[in-house]
Image (cartoon, rainbow, N blue to C red):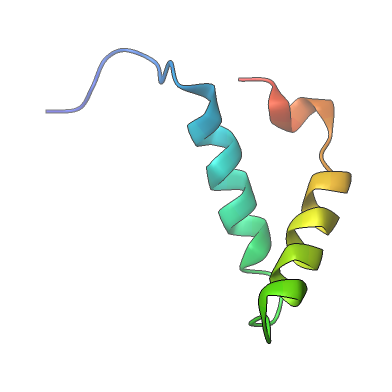
Length: 52
């Protein structure tokens, strides 16, 4: 059975976006590389991504 109601948890959409974008980077060599990748994604977020 598939759910009939829309996803009411907007953060899940944002996590999904971050996961897709992080997969575009090479595997980070450590915490600082991962943090830099996340910061790059965050700085590039558009308002459209944040709308659900």
